Length: 113
Length: 114
Image 1 (cartoon, rainbow over the protein chains, first blue to last red):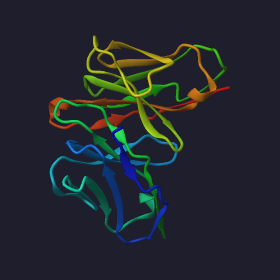
Image 2 (tube, helix red, strand yellow):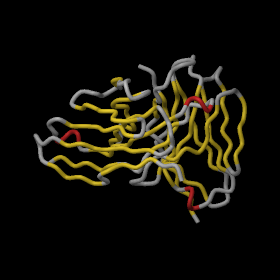
Image 3 (cartoon, one colour):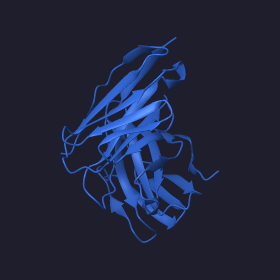
Image 4 (cartoon, each protein chain N blue to C red):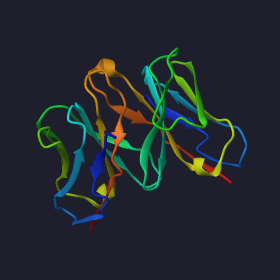
């Protein structure tokens, strides 16, 4: 069973701090990694995709991928109350040509004003 | 704006009833997916389609069927609804020709089976 693991939280950070969200995956040959944000009762919204080892930055968000450790993370700088949501890590487990996203159960983030 | 829409947004039905959830997209994507989301279980894939003539089962297809009527339309049917099919249902699309595998989600349908 190919798995994606996340700490369910809740993770609480003060406004303006850095929020760090972590995800591990079991399939060593995974190639594609995604972070989605989901507000309560709403649909998942794509924040970041990352395919290569290292960091990828987009505004206040940085995704970090370490394939050797089978680990992907999301950093949110200058956290805002509007960042309070559940963050879903998603992985395409197999190599090129695969399609099937496997989702973690999500980490609930709470940004305290 | 290119978009993914789902109808209905909310539906309450009774055990044994047949129900259809519809998904339409204006993104021009070939690939379409149906997921369900349950508290504590996360998002799970029900069916997916890579083009009009292609239908594939996902992780949890039992009790469901789908129809890809056109590139832009992908419907999910529950032939005889049961209470444990109460969940939030999402349609998603993707276009691998862009070089990525990103999937984009519709707003969801909240289904309650009594």
